[in-house]
Image 1: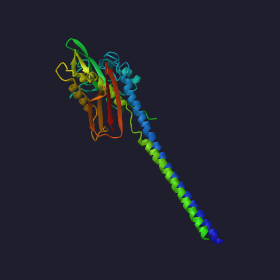
Image 2: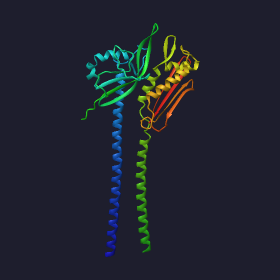
Image 3: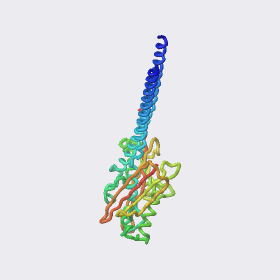
Image 4: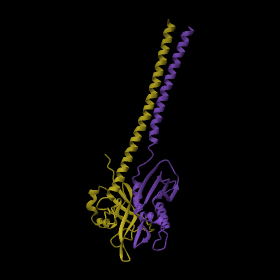
Length: 176
Length: 162
């Protein structure tokens, strides 16, 4: 009788250990899944932020203050009118709160020049970058490819010249 | 007595098998979760789309009737064996311009995040230009554009590998 009782106790103990082991296993698997989900969520949030930032660069390039509109033939997207931007540079500080960015830089990457020359009314169009708010690149920055277009005189004809450029937008991230 | 021992042994085996099946199911679920993440390797193509449209609008050195032709114009002039005002072959100008633009825009190296690119231009379904640089990986950003001019049609494809 005592033997049967002991055997039963051993069985119950075995069962308890088994249940504990399974419970620990489930908890461990749960931790792995939850941590992987959290890291994925963080990755998605970063991707979403990056996408938003890229959209910001494109949004600014396509805004009426920058875009080529119909000035260079048909309507072009991601096209920046260099003359407009030069004009805008004079009053860029007034737009600072409107854009909600710390700086906007437009850089011509093709054709490539060895020397870096900032665009001004005097040297236009023989230059390769324009710094709108003159604060340099600070905080986070995103860039997107754009056409940088201007008009040039070729013999007796005014021709459209579009170069490949990048619009670099820098912004500060507010931490809540 | 022997029957009881046998029954107890069978119960243990059944319990063990259930636990094994349970662990296998959890493992499969876990693998499935991992696989769904691996399939999401194709990244957003926002940047490549902007690059492609900006590149096609870039003015080349090829002159025609007082105007400088864009990369997009040259894509349609090249199959007609057009020669630029300075005597250069339009196809050569197109090749050189596209190659230079790709080189300055995408830094392909082991240190860079860009591992390679694949650029193709088809005119009337015939391959005219193909530039492949670096390594072809599983994660890429892709963009395509198509244009039509009179009877010709052009398809341009770009894949940037990361």
